[in-house]
Length: 408
Image 1 (spheres, rainbow, N blue to C red):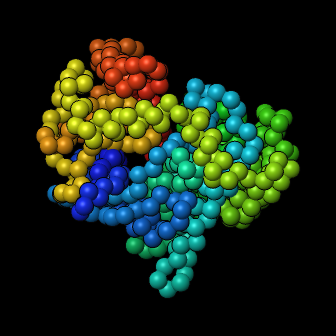
Image 2 (tube, helix red, strand yellow):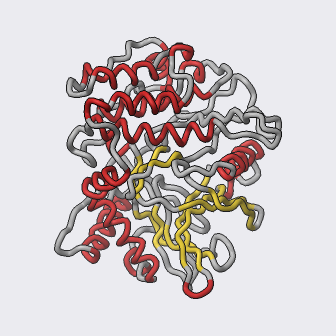
Image 3 (tube, rainbow, N blue to C red):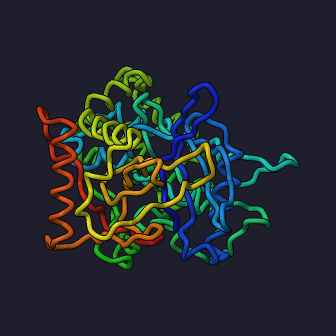
C-alpha cells in the first residue's frame, strides 16, 4: 500500500531531525478505497498523543500523492523476540509482560479517543500484531500502523462484514465480519504475548482456511504448558485475553495491562523502561549498530559506489517532499539493502522490509533459490559490512525479506 522512507528534516542553525515518511504507492494513488484508508490512518494517529503510540507529525500531498510524516523509532519489533536467531534465549516472564503492559496503555489511549462532541470514536486498531508493536532503545513500547483502524464515524466507516487485518492475529468475531470493539484488539495482543513465550505462531497455518479453523476451533494451549517457568497467574491472564467469546475477555486493553502487572508481583513487578532499555541494547547490539552505521553512510553521501552491481539502477529520484526534507534511507524495522535512492545532491541507501518498486527502478525480487541477483545482493551486503566493521564482521543483515503477510 505504501513505501516507507527515513528522511532528514533540517532547519535553521544546523537543526536536524530524522523522521519516517510513508508515501502511498504510485499505482495505488487512484484507488479511492486505499487512499481513504491511508488518510484515515493519518487522521486517527494525528489525534493520538501518547508516549506508547507512534507520533504523526504531518499529512501532506506532493504531485497528487499523499504522504504521512511520523516519528523515527530506533529499536526492534516484538517479532524479534519470537525468533530464536535474533533472541536465542526464551524471553522471561517479566520482559514479555512488561512489554505487553506498555502496549496495552497505547491501545487503551487509542480506544479512548473522542470526537469534538465528546463521544467516543470507538477506534479499533484491527491489525495488532508482532510487527506492529515496537520497543525502542529507551525501553518504550510504541503501537504502530493504524492503516486499517475502524472508527464508528460516518466519514471513515467501513462496512460491516468486511474482513481486514492479518489473519493469524484476528479474533473470531473479526473473521466472521461482525461488529468489532476494543476487545478485538485485546485478543490480538493476547496472541502476540503467547507467541513471545511459545517462540512460534499460535494460529498461523499453511493456508488462510487452516488459520481460520485454528482460530475458531482448535484448542489453545496455556502458556504455562509450554513454559513451566511462567507463573500460573500470568498464564491465566493471557488465556483470558484469548477467550473466543469476547464477553469472557478483559473489557479493555487497560484492564489487561493491569492484570499483567499484577501477575508480576511474585517476580518483583514489571520492568522499568531503563531495565527494558538495557535488555534491548544488549540483546540487539549488533543489529542496532548495523542500522546506525548504514544510516551514517547514507547521510554522509557514501553509498552510491557500494551498490553498482545490484541490478538496474533506480536512477536519481527527487526528494520526497520539498526542502528542507530529503530522503536518505528507509524503514526502521528489518534492514535489507535493496537499492540506491536519492537526488544527486543527497545520496542515500534505500532500505526496505519488503522488495518493492520505487520511482524509476525495478523490483529486486526475493528468490526461493539463489540466483544472480541474490548472489549480487549477498556480495553487496558483505562489502558493506566489511567497510563498516572489518574487525567484528557478522552476517546479521538479511538481504531480501520475508514473504508479505497474508490477509492484508
